Image 1: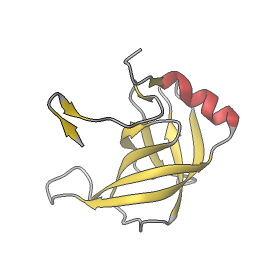
Image 2 (image 1 turned 90 degrees about the vertical axis):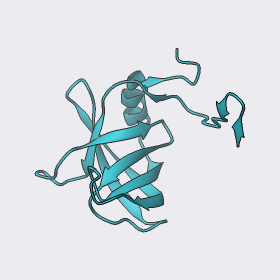
Image 3 (image 1 turned 180 degrees about the vertical axis):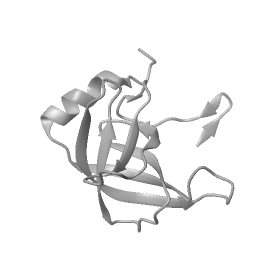
Length: 116
């Protein structure tokens, strides 16, 4: 719900502070797409493939240090983008199966809600 100073942000997890890229997991030659937003609970990505709400998606996230991590996510929403956009869809994901090690590796590229 917007306020006079802008929309209310109800995020409960820190957000992305460094460039991050993703592609479907275990696809060696798939195009890496920039991640639009990520937290410890999920991500917002671009995709040229349609992913139905509620479906599962294995995603490989490429970290700024050159490493990567895989996680399983549930598609929360899919938005069709205009024809001239960088991808056909924008997809909201909720992480389902992320190991404590993967979360620890993701944490350094996040920034808390207060910008710290």
